[in-house]
Length: 453
Ligand code: UGA
Image (cartoon, rainbow, N blue to C red):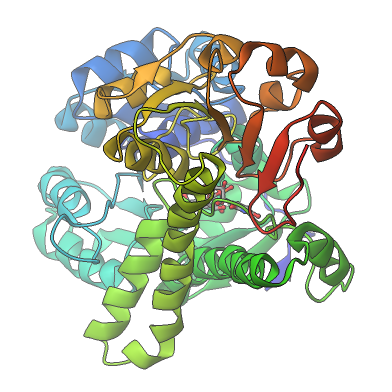
């Protein structure tokens, strides 16, 4: 690893970003902002149309502005034409999705393989293809060989791997000032080319990490596995706290003071969801099994199980708050997104708990500041209410399941006036428990002692 104190001269390039989901849309806009000429490619015509007019198909703070500014420079456009995308660029960023397969833990590589198979025959001059998608280790090497075999330009088409570490909700910041830039290359010249392309980012002093292809892919797998493990560790401690009357928040604070442990990503609660951590964890285990080293990652299976148990525990505590019977009870659910500042509901713990309670016969009324439309599409059986206080009207119990700032601002006294029973399950440990208790609520938090109002 080298600190980028010897930053190369910035070289503006003509580049195509293949796949304009969270990762690709942000990357395309950010690259144009840095000064590159960018074409964003996506197969989905409606997505391309939206992005072309400066609108995003998902909620991401700051992205609309970044996109509008980038479009205004004239250096960014979007297309559904592979031929146009291939003809335009010398650098191709691969940003397509790698969801979990429907019938196994493995990552579905259909989009990655499809992109390479379509792009390669169109590459008639030297090009650098840069993978950013999260893939099972070994994928890059196979794609490299495929590119060389299928491209008219042959060995002049090179492949590098440049994993992405952006978090939803912070995608713009994480792209323009990431905490490190990792590139996996076969040839150091490809790393130099990428350093020149990222020069404005590296000038901020970010660590610049050059490794081989296999390590670059594993860095991403390992980072997400570690983050998931950290969350499940504290949630396992929450189980211990629940069994002993201890307080997981105080415990996390105390162990987090040790700089070797650190307090970040030790927020106990409903656990992790989203389009990344759960499926990446499972994809990593599936790949380890293929490689014959499944024992090395056997612990990740427990990490996954601890995480799933939190959702069941939330249902259990809710049932307890409802005196053992959920059926026919009105349950207000605050939160549907998998985390705040996002409208992403993929593998959302909040929506999962809401659905489990609905299936048990509860009347579930959900509010989320941004994720209602997406939630309604996948879980039409739930009732969606536009206002958080109205969602709580006549509720037998309130569940706080996604920690949006607006939920912290609710006044427990006023909220207490609209509910039927002042009972709340705190699934994210961010509310002011004292204020709720003082307002007479029965306050149950995951991993914390029971407090009766
Ligand atoms: C995650 C990683 O944090 C990024 O570094 C990575 O680039 C990204 O996946 C990806 O692979 O693309 P993201 O899914 O946006 O990013 O969300 P996180 O902030 O990691 O949160 C994931 C889940 O963990 C959320 O459901 C969140 O509520 C939960 N979480 C997070 C906790 O339960 N406790 C914590 O302490 C932290």
